[in-house]
Length: 179
Image (cartoon, rainbow, N blue to C red; front, side, top):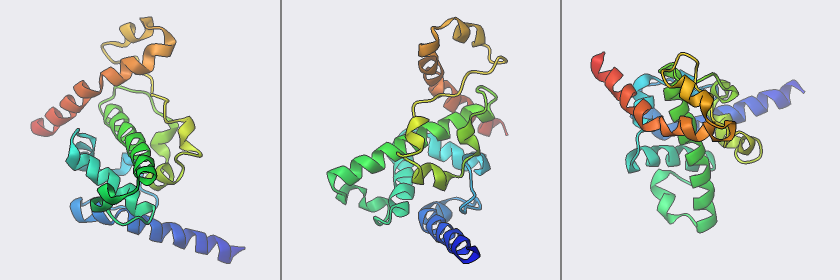
Protein backbone atom coordinates (compact mmCIF):
# COMPACT_ATOMS: atom_id res chain seq x y z
CA UNK A 1 0.00 0.00 0.00
CA UNK A 2 2.86 2.38 0.85
CA UNK A 3 4.39 1.69 -2.56
CA UNK A 4 1.14 2.64 -4.30
CA UNK A 5 0.97 5.91 -2.35
CA UNK A 6 4.59 6.70 -3.19
CA UNK A 7 3.92 6.01 -6.87
CA UNK A 8 0.87 8.29 -6.82
CA UNK A 9 2.88 11.06 -5.14
CA UNK A 10 5.70 10.68 -7.66
CA UNK A 11 3.19 10.76 -10.52
CA UNK A 12 1.75 14.03 -9.16
CA UNK A 13 5.25 15.48 -8.76
CA UNK A 14 6.14 14.60 -12.37
CA UNK A 15 2.79 15.87 -13.65
CA UNK A 16 3.23 19.17 -11.79
CA UNK A 17 6.80 19.58 -13.07
CA UNK A 18 5.61 19.05 -16.64
CA UNK A 19 2.56 21.31 -16.25
CA UNK A 20 4.53 24.15 -14.63
CA UNK A 21 7.51 23.95 -17.02
CA UNK A 22 6.46 27.05 -18.97
CA UNK A 23 5.63 29.04 -15.84
CA UNK A 24 8.92 28.00 -14.20
CA UNK A 25 10.84 29.57 -17.10
CA UNK A 26 8.76 32.76 -16.91
CA UNK A 27 8.26 33.27 -13.17
CA UNK A 28 10.52 32.98 -10.14
CA UNK A 29 7.88 31.30 -7.95
CA UNK A 30 8.49 27.85 -6.48
CA UNK A 31 5.99 25.69 -8.35
CA UNK A 32 5.17 22.12 -7.42
CA UNK A 33 2.25 19.78 -6.90
CA UNK A 34 1.26 21.66 -3.72
CA UNK A 35 1.31 25.20 -5.18
CA UNK A 36 -1.97 27.05 -4.68
CA UNK A 37 -3.01 30.33 -6.27
CA UNK A 38 -2.44 31.93 -2.87
CA UNK A 39 1.22 30.80 -3.07
CA UNK A 40 1.90 32.74 -6.28
CA UNK A 41 3.77 36.02 -6.01
CA UNK A 42 1.91 39.25 -6.66
CA UNK A 43 3.93 39.73 -9.84
CA UNK A 44 2.95 36.33 -11.19
CA UNK A 45 -0.67 36.94 -10.28
CA UNK A 46 -0.58 40.34 -11.99
CA UNK A 47 0.67 38.75 -15.21
CA UNK A 48 -1.80 35.86 -15.16
CA UNK A 49 -4.84 37.96 -14.24
CA UNK A 50 -4.61 40.36 -17.17
CA UNK A 51 -6.77 40.23 -20.25
CA UNK A 52 -5.09 39.46 -23.51
CA UNK A 53 -3.37 36.73 -25.41
CA UNK A 54 -0.16 36.69 -23.37
CA UNK A 55 -1.89 35.73 -20.10
CA UNK A 56 -4.28 33.39 -21.91
CA UNK A 57 -1.41 31.55 -23.55
CA UNK A 58 0.34 31.10 -20.19
CA UNK A 59 -2.78 29.54 -18.73
CA UNK A 60 -3.39 27.44 -21.88
CA UNK A 61 0.22 26.28 -21.65
CA UNK A 62 -0.30 24.97 -18.12
CA UNK A 63 -3.47 23.08 -19.08
CA UNK A 64 -2.03 21.69 -22.33
CA UNK A 65 1.16 20.51 -20.61
CA UNK A 66 -0.88 18.98 -17.78
CA UNK A 67 -2.92 17.00 -20.27
CA UNK A 68 0.22 15.87 -22.10
CA UNK A 69 -0.78 17.60 -25.34
CA UNK A 70 2.47 19.51 -25.85
CA UNK A 71 2.82 23.15 -24.85
CA UNK A 72 0.87 26.38 -25.22
CA UNK A 73 2.25 26.98 -28.71
CA UNK A 74 0.30 23.89 -29.81
CA UNK A 75 -3.06 25.37 -28.76
CA UNK A 76 -4.07 26.41 -32.28
CA UNK A 77 -3.12 22.95 -33.60
CA UNK A 78 -5.44 21.12 -31.22
CA UNK A 79 -8.64 19.58 -32.50
CA UNK A 80 -11.91 21.36 -31.78
CA UNK A 81 -12.87 19.14 -28.83
CA UNK A 82 -9.44 19.34 -27.18
CA UNK A 83 -9.31 23.09 -27.75
CA UNK A 84 -12.74 23.55 -26.12
CA UNK A 85 -11.67 21.44 -23.12
CA UNK A 86 -8.50 23.53 -22.71
CA UNK A 87 -10.56 26.73 -22.99
CA UNK A 88 -13.06 25.56 -20.35
CA UNK A 89 -10.33 24.79 -17.82
CA UNK A 90 -8.40 27.95 -18.73
CA UNK A 91 -11.44 30.19 -18.22
CA UNK A 92 -12.14 28.50 -14.90
CA UNK A 93 -8.52 29.08 -13.82
CA UNK A 94 -8.62 32.69 -14.98
CA UNK A 95 -11.72 33.26 -12.84
CA UNK A 96 -9.99 31.72 -9.84
CA UNK A 97 -6.85 33.80 -10.44
CA UNK A 98 -8.94 36.97 -10.53
CA UNK A 99 -10.81 35.99 -7.39
CA UNK A 100 -7.42 35.48 -5.73
CA UNK A 101 -6.53 39.05 -6.75
CA UNK A 102 -9.76 40.23 -5.13
CA UNK A 103 -8.99 38.18 -2.02
CA UNK A 104 -5.56 39.79 -1.71
CA UNK A 105 -7.13 43.20 -2.01
CA UNK A 106 -9.45 42.28 0.86
CA UNK A 107 -12.56 42.47 -1.30
CA UNK A 108 -13.99 38.93 -1.17
CA UNK A 109 -14.61 36.21 1.35
CA UNK A 110 -12.51 33.08 1.52
CA UNK A 111 -13.50 30.24 -0.75
CA UNK A 112 -12.64 26.54 -0.51
CA UNK A 113 -11.01 26.88 -3.96
CA UNK A 114 -8.33 29.18 -2.53
CA UNK A 115 -6.92 26.27 -0.54
CA UNK A 116 -6.68 23.80 -3.42
CA UNK A 117 -3.45 23.15 -5.33
CA UNK A 118 -3.52 24.50 -8.89
CA UNK A 119 -2.89 21.00 -10.22
CA UNK A 120 -6.03 19.79 -8.45
CA UNK A 121 -8.04 22.60 -10.06
CA UNK A 122 -6.84 21.52 -13.51
CA UNK A 123 -7.19 17.80 -12.86
CA UNK A 124 -10.55 18.17 -11.14
CA UNK A 125 -12.16 20.04 -13.99
CA UNK A 126 -14.82 19.15 -15.02
CA UNK A 127 -15.67 16.18 -12.75
CA UNK A 128 -15.01 17.88 -9.41
CA UNK A 129 -14.55 21.58 -10.10
CA UNK A 130 -17.42 22.07 -12.51
CA UNK A 131 -19.69 22.29 -9.47
CA UNK A 132 -17.68 25.22 -8.14
CA UNK A 133 -16.91 26.79 -11.53
CA UNK A 134 -19.92 29.08 -11.34
CA UNK A 135 -19.52 29.92 -7.67
CA UNK A 136 -18.27 33.39 -6.91
CA UNK A 137 -16.89 34.39 -3.52
CA UNK A 138 -19.05 36.84 -1.62
CA UNK A 139 -18.07 40.45 -1.12
CA UNK A 140 -16.57 41.20 2.28
CA UNK A 141 -18.50 43.40 4.68
CA UNK A 142 -15.55 45.82 4.72
CA UNK A 143 -15.86 46.60 0.99
CA UNK A 144 -17.35 50.07 0.32
CA UNK A 145 -20.04 48.58 -1.95
CA UNK A 146 -21.12 45.92 0.53
CA UNK A 147 -24.50 47.52 1.26
CA UNK A 148 -25.24 47.70 -2.47
CA UNK A 149 -24.15 44.08 -2.81
CA UNK A 150 -26.49 42.98 0.00
CA UNK A 151 -29.38 44.86 -1.61
CA UNK A 152 -28.98 42.91 -4.85
CA UNK A 153 -31.11 39.79 -5.34
CA UNK A 154 -29.06 36.84 -4.04
CA UNK A 155 -28.96 35.14 -7.44
CA UNK A 156 -27.40 38.25 -9.00
CA UNK A 157 -24.67 38.76 -6.41
CA UNK A 158 -22.11 36.79 -8.41
CA UNK A 159 -22.69 39.16 -11.34
CA UNK A 160 -22.19 42.10 -8.96
CA UNK A 161 -18.82 40.70 -7.79
CA UNK A 162 -17.71 39.83 -11.34
CA UNK A 163 -18.45 43.39 -12.47
CA UNK A 164 -15.83 44.51 -9.93
CA UNK A 165 -13.06 42.47 -11.60
CA UNK A 166 -11.78 45.26 -13.90
CA UNK A 167 -11.63 47.65 -10.95
CA UNK A 168 -9.85 45.00 -8.84
CA UNK A 169 -7.27 44.35 -11.56
CA UNK A 170 -6.63 48.07 -11.87
CA UNK A 171 -6.28 48.44 -8.08
CA UNK A 172 -3.90 45.47 -7.99
CA UNK A 173 -1.77 47.02 -10.76
CA UNK A 174 -1.77 50.36 -8.92
CA UNK A 175 -0.69 48.58 -5.74
CA UNK A 176 2.39 47.39 -7.65
CA UNK A 177 3.23 50.92 -8.81
CA UNK A 178 2.90 52.23 -5.27
CA UNK A 179 5.27 49.61 -3.84
